[in-house]
Length: 286
Image (tube, rainbow, N blue to C red; front, top):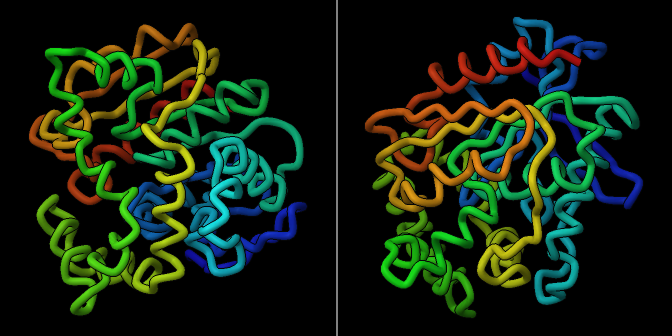
């Protein structure tokens, strides 16, 4: 059974989270991307619980009403706070020390790379969907003749002050359309809009981009066993950035390319991605 709970961290923030599985099972922390929510992991949660894992999927900083600093104060959304949140959520979920499995998609993947860099001893395994290693992404972005600049052009729009109003106008028509165009099903879109469909929530989600312009993060070589899942139809992350990721992982590394799958892997290929995740964690137990 999947339950919704509030997890209060030592910073005083309360994160809304879906939890499933035995409370004493190995922890799997799942971090969503933009513009989605904890519901990204709706199909993975029961499978993880059935294997005996304690699965925890929070709405992250700004997405959770109880963890929403003023988005006008961009310092509250700096990368180091997002990374610290993940470690504190693990503690609030009953793992103040020891190792856990970490999974992240898109922005959640960026945060997961940060946790693996700054807290490698805390992780038994790392699984990233879509988001390449930050150094590989930056290298691709800076290529004069590369295509990553074009794929990432939407990031500039997120910096504009009117973006939230535009995305939310007419019952969030643009937000819904953008997700639907990338094969996110209507039911999932409704769930995500239920989290992000207010101006305070969406402004807070956009503050991640505004506080961390260019997604620049000084992340070194990763020393945690890593599974990287990328769909070759991803319109946001190109092959240069994706295929370069393995260069920045010194631990056991596996890259799985899903043919015909776009950016939102868990909405197009949840069964395949979950099976890969389970195999990866089984190879690197706590």
